[in-house]
Image (cartoon, rainbow, N blue to C red; front, side, top):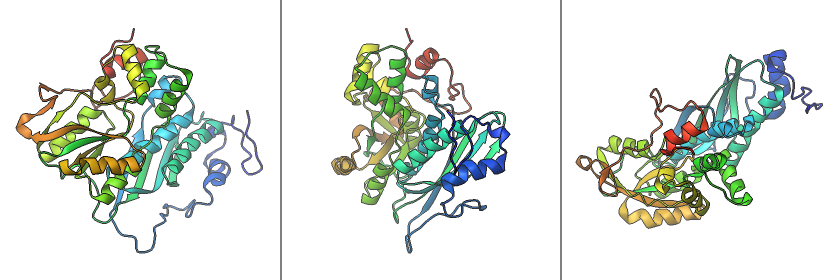
Length: 360
């Protein structure tokens, strides 16, 4: 259906290659972002309060093909949402408040105006949900779609979180609710059946993952986190990286809690809860906390409406990284420039590779 308006007289079916950059700027981007300070200039402008202090932080990340696209959710909106979440999650791990997002779009000329608008909608809705906005970007044509963004944030004075700073005896907290993305994959693959309302909730959480920005900022402001990292590639590589950065080992429990509908998916599909919890795609955080601060940290996060649970303890390096203090842990890891690097694929194969479960 064409979306022709007086403000933006370009129908959704028109291809970007038939418009050209100037028309795209004037008829698609200006109606949406024309009120943003510095729109059309060579540099984005960030609004900052007078006298505000604290480290400025920046991160940049690209968005691969979202898993939900393979699950049949082909609306470009989901790629836009994920692009924003991926970058905002890095700010969350720094304990930063987002100031803005700069987005770069490389799109085939066959992309329609409607598809581009849906992509923009996803980015805009996600940034708004996280209390920030798009402040600039770039657009060019190319043979395949490539999406990259840069997120800028500000930390509270002296409160920037990083991967260094953890010590032996610190507890590891998992911040957020793991398991939604791959639960939806199992539901689509008919490995489990739930009520329509439960499926709708899992689908919503899978398609619109939230970065733990409020949680990271709350922990940083309260001085409760000694080190932090977002779970972008799986729980195992996150714990491994934190341990490596601090010269430590870890004892991780397999008794990680899942929300009730996800536990039901595990029971029906024959998948262990830990196998689902350690997968990637839900943009949780792993945070090192002093043992005496664990309960206060949980209470602080509960005040932000964020779930948190203790999943392990940091130990001397020579003890290695183990599960339940016994077997060495070699868990799920999505690593770039390796055979496990994410490039999509057939769903049954992905379930087998990521969850260690053969789809029936």
